[in-house]
Amino acid sequence: MTMKKTMAVCLALWIAAGMLAGCQPQEKPLTRTVMAMDTVMTLSLYDIRDEAVLDACTALIEKRESQWSRTPADSDIARANAADGQPTEVDASTVQLLESALAYTRLTDGAFDVTTAVLSDLWKQAQAADTLPETAQREEALAKTGADKVVLDNTTVTLTGGAQLDLGAIAKGQLADELSALLTRKGCHSALIDLGGNIYAHGTKTDGSPFTVGIAHPHKDNALAATVAVSDMAVVTSGSYERGYTVNGKRYSHILDPATGLPVENDLASVTILTASACTADVLSTACFVMGYDAARVFVDSTEGVEAVFVLTDGTVVMTDGVTVA
Ligand code: AMP
Ligand code: MG
Image (cartoon, rainbow, N blue to C red; front, side, top):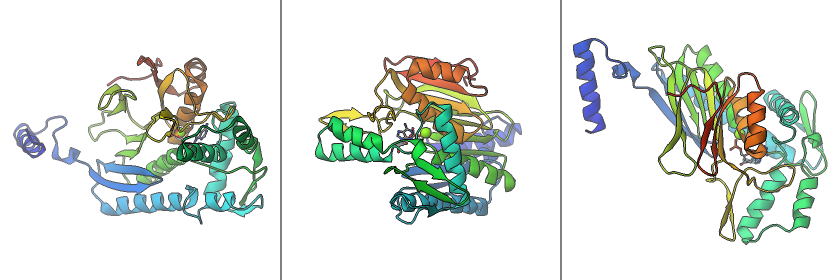
């Protein structure tokens, strides 16, 4: 049956029965797709039909991209990276995000690190030259890595020791939280915020039931590792090799281990974190991927309000106790 026909049947049933879960015409969301931060972002609003709300969301997305991406050249991050160790004036939101990034580095014992940019550049060059980096090059890049090289005050950021910032593992999470807060202020209480691998279930479905979110299986095309039921909850996955590097015909992860400078290669194919803050979920999915299953499992089990779905490289799917399967 075509989509159009399905909807027509649903509509007819709805009119006939008065109410039929999932088929109410108002369940069809008002959507907007925006390309930003190198990601296809889709917002779906279920309880209001107001393009102006989507315009406000789009403006926020564009503002944060113009501040937090490494490109364009006048973003806060690009200017700090080009400042050659001098203090750079940045937006208060950028200082705040960097402050929480440094706290997350401490929380994850260095697994999450906003200064992996020099290492990513090294691996980009390795891909372009189709040659693995020399140990000496890697050590040189590692010497320019470390959250201790990021110095903040109220309005400026200073990068010491050749460090360069990359907010790729935290910016979309923070943006999802800000979009959720914006939607609440605009009176929207039922929406899905999909920023690539970062999903935020804002509120519930209009009938009060939780949203259903599918977690892609990293090894199987068009297959799901799990389907979870969530409301007011982020579902963020790290570990896809789509953004990785290919050198000598071998695919390497885009997530780098800040301790070694090497792309992560362990027993995990992907980690999905479920927690109320999308920023926390974004950070922890990346950090847990770096840690490997055993350490990540201990970390998640001992962190209040955080649940995870792990897909191991052998295809096994492991969920922590608090995950609600749909
Ligand atoms: P995500 O997709 O959220 O796991 O973030 C991965 C992106 O964050 C990469 O493309 C890099 O830009 C950056 N990144 C890579 N490794 C790390 C790391 N260990 N800590 C923080 N950011 C990282
Ligand atoms: Mg992340």
